[in-house]
Amino acid sequence: MTSTLDDDRPIGWILTRRDVLALLGGSALVAACAPAAVSSPAVATSAATATILPSCVVRPALTEGPYFVDEKLNRSDIRSDPSTNAVRPGTTLALAFLVSKVNGGACTALANAIVDVWHCDALGVYSDASDPNFGSTKGTKFLRGYQTTDAGGSAKFTTIWPGWYQGRAVHIHFKIRTTAANGQVADFTSQLFFPDAMNDAVFANAPYAQKGVAGILRNAGDGIFQQSGGKLTLSPAKTEDGYAVIFDIGLTAA
Image 1 (cartoon, rainbow, N blue to C red):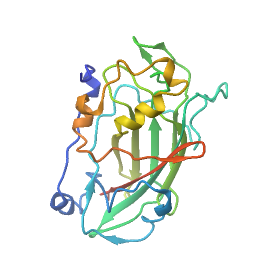
Image 2 (image 1 turned 90 degrees about the vertical axis):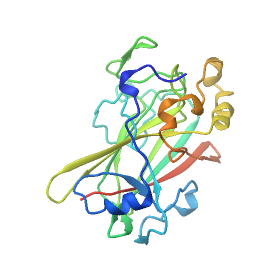
Image 3 (image 1 turned 135 degrees about the horizontal axis):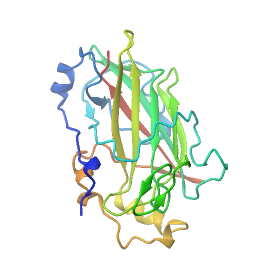
């Protein structure tokens, strides 16, 4: 079953390495790539130095969807609602982005990029939204926030493993905004996914278990996931209090 929301139609595309290199001189943010997919915290500094691109893993742009709200919440731990400080329950997920700039055939760490993250809670509910499936949560801001990348291109978030809702595979939305020297602002928007088997393992526990997985949409059945080419699926590592993962992404920007 694929999403029936017009706002959720896939809009990304997959470029070859030749396509990416041909676009390096562009003035807008036109593609996303990385020297290699990274899922272990042990290599968190891999993007901090320039790297020749023997290969390029393309990260396709995907639809923003209907639930983005530019809350301007500068925070690393996005689990709580700022008005009440109530923390949304769920399995802890430490999510780090390593953002690089692709220029002149090399990747270098990209500082001062704004990384926005937003996703549903353990039961499939988004904050600050109205939807027939969960009603209105207007005025709340849980599971939303942004971080600015540091000198090493890193932006780190503490969140929870997202739940599921009808019509979509389990996913996290993200947006990366950059400002060029001439003041031009560009953004790259996409979504992150999880292996089906890992979702099942997490959802066997509270609070996810109360909803079950009887109606869950697997990755292969999600039309948006099908546009990802497998380049946006995370492989989180188990930690003492949940999971952790690092996502490498390079941007071709001015």
